[in-house]
Length: 75
Image (cartoon, rainbow, N blue to C red):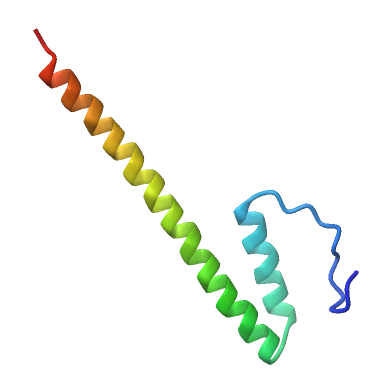
């Protein structure tokens, strides 16, 4: 455990695990440290949201690009 009393040996593999870990920390903290963690989590959530938007946009673009290619290449 570190000086805050949290386990430092946890394996955090996905962004959702990380988010859950920080939300758990936020519930335990008080004062300035809690405000810092909340600000960090809002920023982190925004980054996750943007990456999901990029992924969805990329998938939709490639789908419509293939669809257009098939329409134009019909004999």
